[in-house]
Length: 193
Image (cartoon, rainbow, N blue to C red; front, side, top):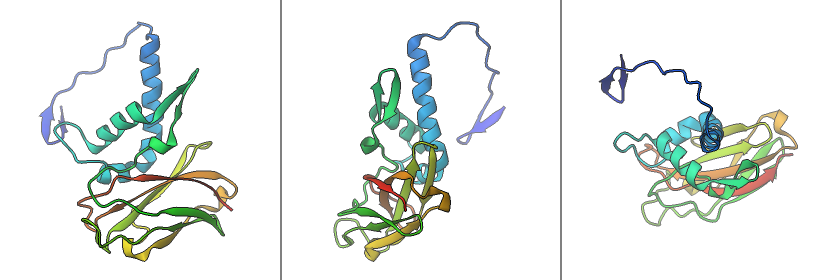
């Protein structure tokens, strides 16, 4: 017996099978494994900011479904990421505007954006959420509060061993109380110095 999402459930042990998986099953397993490997290190970001829990689907379920359907490309014989389509957050908050990234000294990323805190449902206290991903090592780093919307800039420090690596960067804003987030944006790549 176990408790799942507030409900008591009884589970049976999975049965072993000797059937050989079909090509489609193997393909789906590979996609699932690829998305799981990407999401696991940034789970706190996804758990807080990817849509809203609805019915039996958690935010992580929503993120898995979106990434499998929208952010993977088949390049025979492998699946690859379409980094521009990856989302780390999804919501109704006023989006990030005019964002730029650049390498800064000491394995840092300088981020700048437009202070649009007077537009829509934005507020000066909205916090910047950032995810950084390095594809050769499949490593991720994130910040749940890099700075406020009104600050218009921030510096994200990464570990010393990242010098010379190319990283992908996504960013979004979230309310100070985490009640709402904006749909994230892919900001491109930067080579760390």
